Image 1 (cartoon, rainbow, N blue to C red):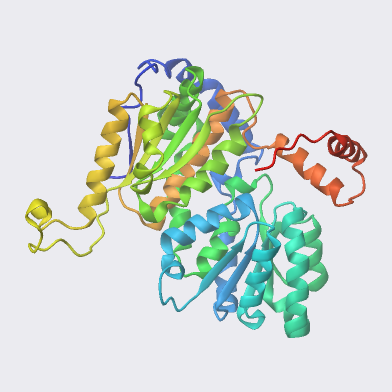
Image 2 (image 1 turned 60 degrees about the vertical axis):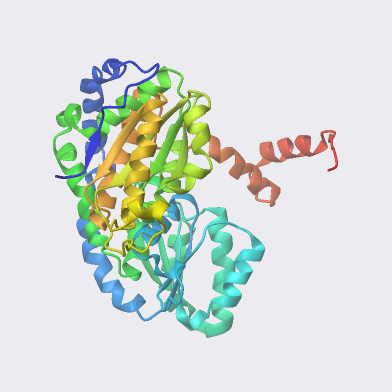
Length: 446
């Protein structure tokens, strides 16, 4: 049996069983749009035209980076979340005691104290730096790049270039100019491949390869989900990603405002944060969208699950489990009498029982729930899940009549920040800042 979606509890409470039908009826229009955008090269995450090129380009780079003990990734948002999810799922050793390397460090924020502490503790001679920005002009990432460049230069001189790799646009942007100017190694982010859809490109797979993760299995798992749809968009109506999109759109139509991503594969917990960006940045537009809420089983049974079960009835749920059972120690017969029923059971049985109990409790409380039941929890399975969710996100956006590939509202904050820092060409933002800062403050001490 392969991975599957289990739908028996998907339509519940005020979401009637026929709620998705109006959106299934749009499959002809959606499949025609899919065909057009694939032909125009605007959905590279789906048909993966870069796949073979990556298979050729990445292996020769590995002998160069393997001698380093540390990889420092400079990137934010989609340039960081996928890599972190992959590392925590398939190379968790660095988060465990007595790890001997290699280590992946991701500088995904601009906290001066944390960044300076990281550079103090890393040895430049042992560190390869990967600077990731599709545009080549992300201010947070470039600021980090300028500081790291000086850090490397001060420690190892002109050899700093041997420690730098950029992952950016093939032809344009400041990072591409830097790669050409200094001659250091670079990898390509293909055209139209936005950050939140880029984890299965060099953006996420270069760090994965450094850690010894089977990055080709991640690619293969994604390809298996996407291939039939990319080759024949008319198959849209039977593809699980479209069924998910119709369900998500039905949730929104029936005033559900939150989508829980409840992950009962503990090693995949960071995929909840990756999914949250994918879903929120793609679909939160024009007053529309459903807020993604990452949750981890069993941890969040003891925190936010009370709200899921007995709070406002405004939540749907994607419930993720794996049929793989870790081989680990079980409970002996030497237990207190009141716990003797655990004797002989493996420790992993507790997770399975907790997942089943929580899934049943959510369903009993009327939470519309789609169960993502993974055959296993290996890299190929993770690639399949990532592709399914990416495609479902795009189709949901199309059903909402919005563009799931841009993020216009986010740009306002970036422009205002640039103006605050003195960048040229932001006269309107400068005026807005002046007016905002001139407003009377209403303070209350505590």
